[in-house]
Image 1 (cartoon, one colour):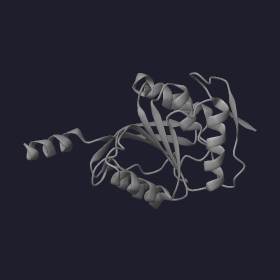
Image 2 (cartoon, one colour):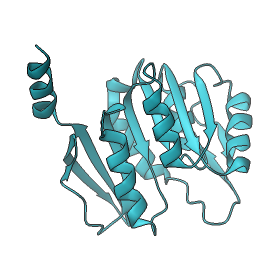
Image 3 (cartoon, one colour):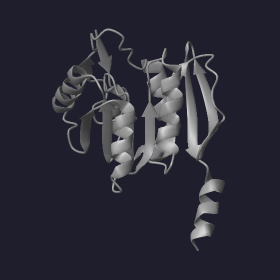
Length: 197
C-alpha cells in the first residue's frame, strides 16, 4: 500500500504506507480538506507536524509551498522513513525530523526562541484522550509556539472550546474523523501587549 501526495510540486507521487502497528495515516479526503482550508496561508509558512507518523502531512505541506516543516515523532523507524521519503520526493529543503515524545518535543521547541510556527497539525493516538488535552495545553501555554493548530480526533470526541491561551474556532467532520481548529486567543494576546506598554 502507498500514500499519494495530493497537490503541489510532488503531486500524484506516492510514498510507502507505514506498516507499523497502530499507525493510522490521515486519510486522503481529510488531508485534502485540511489543505483546502489552509489554502494560501500555507505558502511560505513554517509548519509544525506533531505525532507525525507517516509524515504525509509534512510532505504534503512542503509539496504545496511551506517554507519549512518540523515533524515530531517518537517512533525511530517512522522518523527514518520520513527522511527517506522526503529524499525520494526531493522535499528535503526546510524539512527537519525530531525523534522524540511529543510533549518532550514541544518543551524543547518552547526553549528555542527562534522556533515559532504559523500553522501546526497534531494527530495523537485516538485512544489517548489524556494526551490530546496535554498536547493542547503544551502548545499554547505558557507561550504559544504557533498561531493556529489543527487537531485530528475521532468523531464524537468532546472538543475543548477553551484552552489556556487559545480557543476553538472551527470543527469539521469527515466520516469517522474530526478536525478541530484552534487559534491563539487574540484578546488574551492584546491584554498581554497592553501590560508590556
